[in-house]
Length: 369
Image (tube, rainbow, N blue to C red; front, top):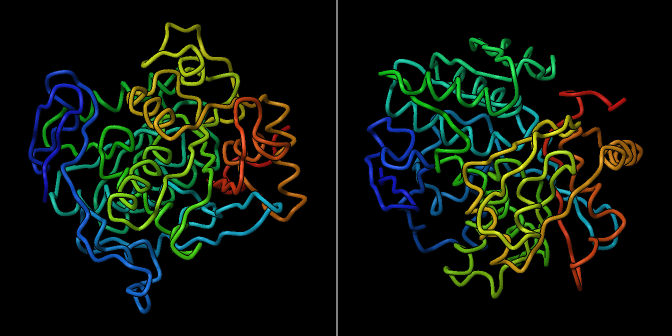
């Protein structure tokens, strides 16, 4: 195993220490990890039909708790926009990409219990992989979380704690539990192993497109785990000499909860003081203060991308439109299609080819009223 390091102050920790955040600044960890050379398109034939086929670029060496995650289809929506169907993952969301890495790590460390917090999808995924690994798991969710998601968490045998208040209150409750001895915090925000799982989304695109990437990746952003994974993969592929240039990152937020979009368009490097968030159908990205805000803003700027926001009516319309095309997707998962289906908006020139993720299945939330 490698080591954690804090991107703010350089503090380091052994991965085996169960220290879930930097003890100096309480910020998220990054991972000291460099992919091994040797990945090539012609080397992939015959490998496992899951994200574990990219073994050279993963910080864990064996799929100890795999459910067959990854390798989701890429299908066209228009002449220029394609969708990657991550709502077809084992627990019906893209979060499986990161959850398998976190729980794989937890199984190696053998903690007394696993703790997670979520607006729903990450919690269902961690619960499923902990069931696969035989690890006791407690998942904290906001009390207003979709009943279908909480039902799925319980079905996998996890203990569910519904926290009064918003997503931030839920995170604080989980972090208090994570500070107790013997707890492994399976945080999709603070633990960088999750990002090394989500980056496989882009490696799959690279393989399916014959060794290239689309001009633009549109990604829904709350805590930013898929976007940061995409940025990580793009940087790795470029460093390995496997792509000539990196794609633009278009980050999409709900207009009702858009702290990163506000900071980006104000030219800020971090979050601005903001008013309370409004309710939104896109519960999975309703994050008022994402801990990796600085990294997200830097990644989007560094790619030449931008932030777009979508209204509740646009989310409803995009969900109905995708359903009419045969895709039953939850309300958070339609945000990117809502943002790009009529063009990429102001400030985005020469859109070229665009890929959007359909992140979660409609069975998790139902159709928006």
